[in-house]
Image (cartoon, rainbow, N blue to C red; front, side, top):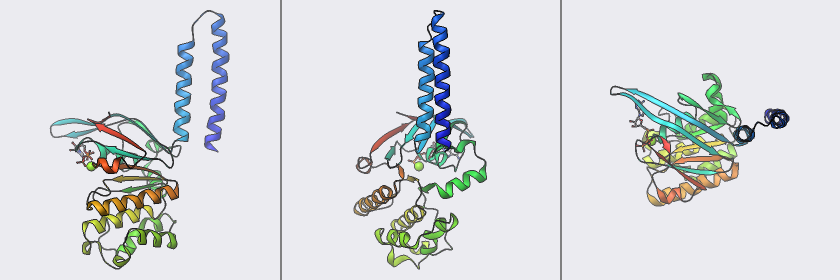
Amino acid sequence: MEVANSLTGQKGIVKNFINGGANFCQSGVNLAPFLQAVARYIVDQRKALIMLLSARNIQKTYVTADGPFAVLRGVDLMLEAGETLALTGESGSGKSTLLHVIGGLDVVDTGTVMIDGADITAMDDAARAKMRRGVVGVIFQQFNLIPSLTVAANIAFQARLSGTFDAAWVAALVDRLGLGAQMAKYPEQLSGGQQQRVAIARTLAPRPRLVLADEPTGNLDEDTAASVMQVMRDLVAETGAGLLMVTHSTALASQLDRRVLLRAGQIA
Ligand SMILES: Nc1ncnc2c1ncn2[C@@H]1O[C@H](COP(=O)(O)OP(=O)(O)OP(=O)(O)O)[C@@H](O)[C@H]1O
Ligand SMILES: [Mg+2]
């Protein structure tokens, strides 16, 4: 509805500009460049509404003991629903920072992040937290499991919080990620690779529209990484979600629809 209203509004804007432009043209002024810029702006706005994720001109500077450090310097990134995108770049290039601001876990200095047509950079903390629970799922570089909860409770945690717990879906996730024998254990009793699979299951349990994954197979051996990757791609495809995944592995990156490289805080 919001999208429809906005598009109707855009049509009105276009008509006004065309009428205005025609009047000016009669007076001999060349309005073509201006009208082209307006058309570009409208197309961009429309894209941002249609896209699952639209990050525009993201800038972020950390204040460090050595002075300001510009970690993101005008990043633009788009993702459609159902699309999978690999984010690569050397260590320290800002990949995790970018994922955190897209996931609403950190704030930008400048720029906008729109998810499903909603501008999360304009939301207050409470609205952003709600959006994070329901729409966006993040798989962290460090798994962030809750140590006092069993594997089963960790996996169900976010889905229960957002009221989207579905026992059959969770059972299928557990099965496909090979976690059936670990459900009663606590995170500290698991290997790094098992903890990572629990983190993946926990994130996918509420069926997020947008999955952000920071090196989700970084702690897995090559074979397990390949099978976990396959499961993630299948699950994301089944739910129609978009996947933005940070990876250092060119082999994994090549399995996704698109690849972008972050270099010195900008998309190269
Ligand atoms: N809270 C912070 N304060 C100051 N500088 C920070 C902070 N967090 C990150 N940085 C710096 O910002 C840069 C980007 O960090 P980030 O974690 O986004 O890199 P990355 O691309 O994810 O690296 P890696 O591949 O090693 O995970 C690094 O130089 C890091 O030292
Ligand atoms: Mg990182």
